[in-house]
Length: 162
Image (cartoon, rainbow, N blue to C red):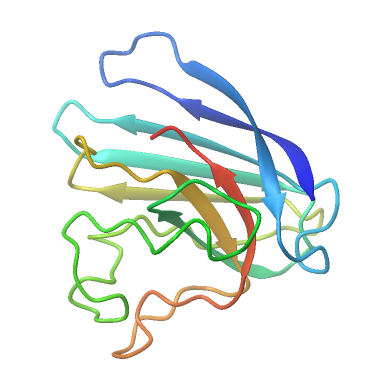
């Protein structure tokens, strides 16, 4: 099921933002209801870091969700976006690599109207290797050994031109 969404990107040189229409791919309509929307704004700071802002609407009210940048674009199955994008590739659930300094984590809790917002800041910028999507997960991100970076089922995905 595809729902309308918008992905935005802003360059570090403060050029006009790139506005890209895209679709939100929903894998679980029970936790990401029909009509749910998401938008992403990403920019590189003059110092070489990256900010990513995620805004969602239409999700379940007063609920915790996890979200991360993933390595591949969205597809028809929850596995299609691939693993989390890691600045320094390493272990998928090893806290040395699966952490908010090496990945883009965007956990949020929706308000009573089902809207959510999250901001991530990392000290690195994308190079020729870039993330390609943001996946919304069923729970906040875990941090312990063997579970670091996991956040439950993949509920929805937004392809983002980082």
